[in-house]
Amino acid sequence: MSDPAGPPAEALAVAAAVAATSTTIEVAAANPLRDPRDKRLPRVAGPCVMVLFGVTGDLAKRKLLPAIYDLGNRGLLPPGFSLVGFARRDWQDQDFAQLTHDAVKTHARTPFREEVWRQLREGIHFVPGEFSDDGAFDALAMALREIDDLRGTGGNYAFYLSVPPKFFPVVVEQLKRTGLAEAPDGSWRRVVIEKPFGHDLKSAHELNEITTSAFPESSIFRIDHYLGKETVQNIMALRFANNLYEPIWNRSFVDHVQITMAEDIGIGGRAGYYDGIGAARDVIQNHLLQLLALVAMEDPTSFDAKALRREKEKVLMAVRLPSDLALNTARGQYAAGWQGGEKVPGYLQEDGISPDSMTETYAAVKLEIANRRWAGVPFYLRTGKRLGRRVTEVAVVFQRAPHLPFSKDDTEILGQNALVIRVQPDEGITVRFGSKVPGTAMEVRDVSMDFAYGESFLESSPEAYERLLLDVMIGDPPLFPHQREVELSWQILDPIEEFWATQGQPEPYPSGSWGPPSADAMMARDGRTWRRL
Ligand code: NAP
Image 1 (cartoon, helix red, strand yellow):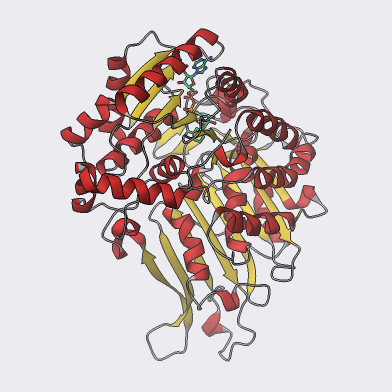
Image 2 (cartoon, helix red, strand yellow):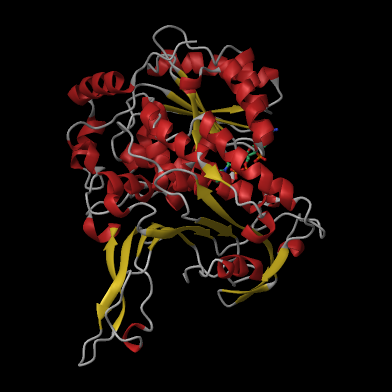
């Protein structure tokens, strides 16, 4: 089981070879939407096949298939690139091509161009089957060998498991059984696993045992799509490419940090996935703890996967839960209410949800980090569905000035300085600080200074999945969490989940509000409030 294709060598060789001949690279050079990093040398994937399991699912249609097209449109897919769909429909290649075409037309970020579509269409194949069907996987192995012969894909396969989590082990076992997990010399095999990686520490460990019995760790790509977002990567640029923030990025100046991922939608048609998982497992264990790690870690010695993961792991190891979980966590469940002018049902009335479900749709936790930089600085994490607005942000809230040489009246409505990194929507950064109100008095009030990603750079940001799919094909792992990070995150969450399991029904909150009263009470006890978003 080798994984020999080191990213720089592979990317360089392929890009150089392809650049000499391929029209796709010319497309990249002319494309105004091109990633600025690609100016010197496009990061082009080498010859390969992407095998997508679960192609009829929500994620494949909304995100993955459009992202593959967008990569093609940016000239970042290699000639011969092939896309194999696997699903339990009695379909032919053209049915899968039609599904891909519709998904691209509806959801792609870049404009639809016939010539790009035609190139992609040539490499589209479909293999029907159930995940438990040995014969279907044997047929897949045969189809891949034929594709290699026809399209020169060299035995390089990326297997993307866009499937319900209970099928991760089943598909991995099938890939192992058929020998597809094992890369012959000079080729590579990679597996991409979607979150959630398990539902607690034990199951995450078991899943990892199964996956590593088939693939070497270097061939396992665990996707937390937040890490593919430009603004999330920009946290590292902001902190480590500037001298402005780092000197005050510590307990001497920071009062607390709030990390929020709020959704205004309910569970939609995903009852089967969501019920029994809940807000904390769905969002805090992965997205929010990854954001915490990037905000709080020390500077890595480089941005290669090993160095970056080492720093994230160190800070996750230093996370501490407060001693009283009843007072320092909150969980809720949305009740009926109004949203966007429409009456919406409560969680317990949603299709497919049992009327006595204890699953939380809102979760808030207070965490501390036991190290010299952060001792005593609380990190408040919250997430929920059917909240007032869709927004994800990290707010670093600074301590008040030690002395205000103004009259009390003049600073009555002056808040604390804050630096807010908006992850979505309207990606950007806002700094909030006090400024004099025009006039004869010395009144000081909060104002904001805004950096909007969309206004400062001409090109639109690639979708997270574009970046991550390309990284998989190139074999570039820094933006994928290591198993150790996954397990450390479960170690943080498991005691909270165990405590909540003893607490009965989550507290209801009206749809369209900002969560249950206990979340506000948790902040009020610390003399703080949640940011109004
Ligand atoms: P989904 O809509 O339920 O799709 C699941 C896919 O798996 C469908 O194509 C389904 O085919 C197929 N499938 C299920 N059982 C099968 C079987 N026994 N044999 C063959 N195919 C089978 O799920 P999803 O929302 O796309 O999510 C996929 C994965 O991504 C999950 O692990 C989820 O946790 C993760 N994820 C999703 C999102 C998102 O926004 N959707 C975000 C982050 C992570 P049928 O159409 O025949 O049922």
